[in-house]
View 1: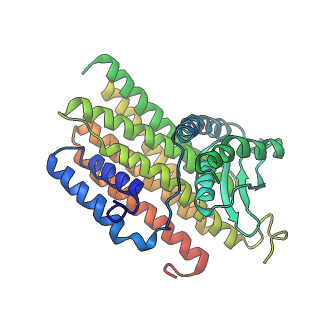
View 2: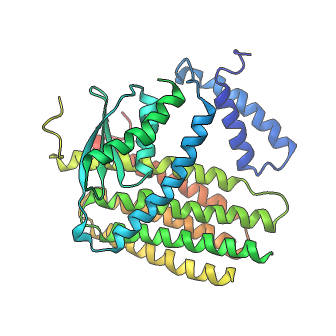
Length: 162
Length: 107
Length: 89
């Protein structure tokens, strides 16, 4: 089993993506999707890290729901700031010290931070594990740092158990 | 087409278009680059996402069979938006030469 | 009703494209222009999706998908060029 599916999650993702792109239209596409789902991970296996991370499903779904809600809130927030007087906005660079030390999970966290209210991630310093973010309108730096750590970093650590 | 579905579609399309417009207003109005970055990454992405989902519902209702490829496109948009924002921010820091916290960074 | 909503949405997207174009012409930095170009790409996707609904033709969606991919690759390549003076390391 392991020989044909070195990355089961990747295979499932490729299969579902191919079916979605073809509107799940016919059996022929399902066969083609199956061939791609087996073939592509085998062909590209040397590019992927050896052990795909284990994911806990329930915290992952909960985080997904939180992020979707936050994306909507974020857009309304930005909209309010954009339409108001721009002189009163107080932008700031903030450094968030990270507890997690995994490049993949860090990337995920940075992406979530970019899509959610008030902040865009600029850089991750991998020597010190500090996430540098730019906040559009900040009154309290500690509150921003705290929000990122409790709202997104803690669930991510739980999901990937790292 | 059912009146409820039509209202839902109209709502999604108008909300999507408003968010897209707001993102561009932010891009045009805000005073510095890092502030401008917020508009397109969040607001415009959500706006286009809403419109693409409206398209998915429309073609699922009007044509035989369901229309799924819009879901793939929405996923793609939401994955790529933070990546391009991140790269642009890095490029801007690189050009500016004097980023805010450069002095306390080792190396 | 749907038709009316689509017409209004067309006008809003057109305005959004004009605003992005303004930022692209105005600059002041290269990064601002790339960001404006990226936004313009995303606005184009919105426009094509709307056009697809308006003309009841799902083929427009394929081109929107292509523009999404090309726009992303273009933005990444341009930012990489600004970062290192080189695209492929």
